Length: 309
Image (cartoon, rainbow, N blue to C red; front, side, top):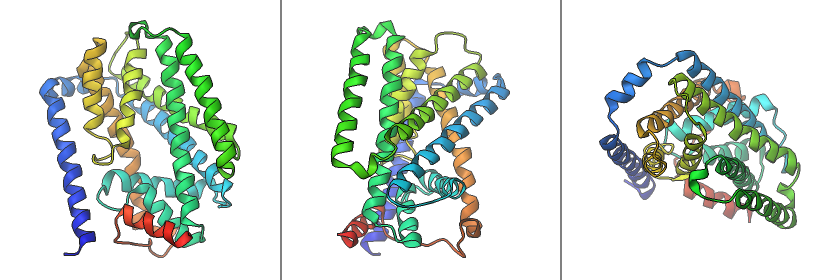
């Protein structure tokens, strides 16, 4: 067995092991029976609304990414880009041992349209960065509504203003190509995070929660950073660990907080599964068959960057 296949198998084992261990630690503190009872007694129509809100967030997210693509000269229709976006989501959650959703999009677009890999990788990086900025802005806004944190209101406001100003200056000066439509892209980033917050609120309504939403929303947004951790399956497990300990810190119901996270993950997995359609029907992407590559994500990225130098 060569090193490439060995690393792919090892990566899958690590991801499953870390995810399994994380969930084991979570369920030592949260009784699965209580979670099951909460779901069975929930209002399922609010779950439908949560799914629709999440779908809206991903439609906007796909459009935002397309704006970054257009900034580097790649002209894709919104419909075509969303199909590829769904395929990337499927790769991220259901095929965690391969090249990954972002890596596959770079590989696919470079092969089909001849765009430099470095430009595609950088566009995806700034797309993610805009999402982190939006998460930072909304989290800072929530701090104002959580007095127990003990932070003066002007601190998060100053942090947002100063951080945004520095962010814009750096991008505009050193990465001007990716500063194109800066305001439009970042308004869309706010829209993505806002609809995800709405999805969480719908989940809370589904679970008949009538208390204060802001602490749960704050913990949820903070735990979303765990999705960036590479050695889990879509952040599953790591996100829940952060939520359990965050709930203890704020004195919240950890069963409810974990249930919110698991439900949100299930909703995202349901939408991501739609991306499997393009694996079995590649003609929907204008291909007789999808391009395949057996390299790991890191090796693929390195090769793309070397070829573009």
